[in-house]
Image (tube, rainbow, N blue to C red):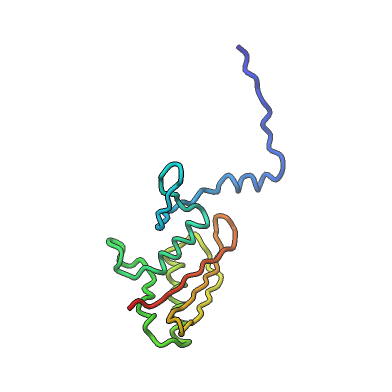
Length: 148
């Protein structure tokens, strides 16, 4: 019985082939709990969608909400009842920046835009970031509103 050897050469850019082989898939649980139509299992979020979901969850979580992780979260809820002015918007930006830098090491924050929508009693927040692993720019939008 003879073994046949096959030529397995890589053509093209070798540097790109090495970088692509090191990328790992990022998965996260979708809190919407969307079911797969055939498997009847929860569909996980992957890659950039998982990171966006993580950022949304971090910013909508107040400190001391999660058991055993009391310092996790941005604690933005208290600022929603402050006067809607430039100072409050500045504090919102600072807290968002600190939270993402501290708890989301997979991204590099590039810009934050906070829009005051006083007539609807809410803030619209747009966060622009760069995902380190995939080297792509992405953004996420979150609406922060008061609950009475």
